[in-house]
Image 1 (cartoon, rainbow over the protein chains, first blue to last red):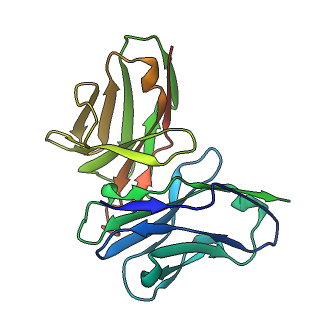
Image 2 (image 1 turned 45 degrees about the vertical axis):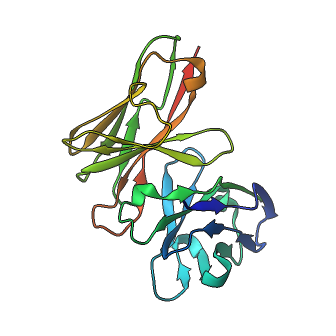
Image 3 (image 1 turned 120 degrees about the horizontal axis):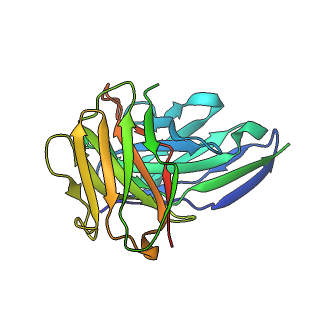
Amino acid sequence: AQSVSQHNHHVILSEAASLELGCNYSYGGTVNLFWYVQYPGQHLQLLLKYFSGDPLVKGIKGFEAEFIKSKFSFNLRKPSVQWSDTAEYFCAVNAHINTNAGKSTFGDGTTLTVKP
Amino acid sequence: GAVVSQHPSWVICKSGTSVKIECRSLDFQATTMFWYRQFPKQSLMLMATSNEGSKATYEQGVEKDKFLINHASLTLSTLTVTSAHPEDSSFYICSAPNPTGAGELFFGEGSRLTVL
């Protein structure tokens, strides 16, 4: 079975600070990796995803994530956060052989609060 | 992007009654939809996979007689919480896979159920 661990439950930053949210997963095979974001009052939406190729993937709004296979990690980063980045962030993983994306396993989420 | 909509956004009911939550794909067809349950500060837990034209597939530990799922059309799946009890109070979220097969999920806005 696969599992996902997000180490930070709540992160508070000032605007322009750099962000890194940790995500580690456990699964022995090839994985697909996702970061989803939920802005206040809105649907969960995809931030970025990794299936294969370049392990550094770029998503919307200046976010990026790096897949480090040896560390089973897929940390999310942004060089300079804005107040509008305040949201809840979820890391998710599913087995590469599992084309059913709904079988993704989600982390517990990290609440990011950016102070203006 | 594709839109998934849930209704109602919140519902309060008395113990013993049944509650129906709808999940619609607004601008695409979804042969598969997924239902999750989310407890405060916890992860999304997949409850079941809703399959258009066939029975839903339930995750281990989810009572299929308690959580009835019907996928009546290519754009609508419903979750009915039968004989609801206070412990069923939760946030229920549905999703549908990207119809282009890109691997990510489109989420509804969620439905907050409170059982008195």
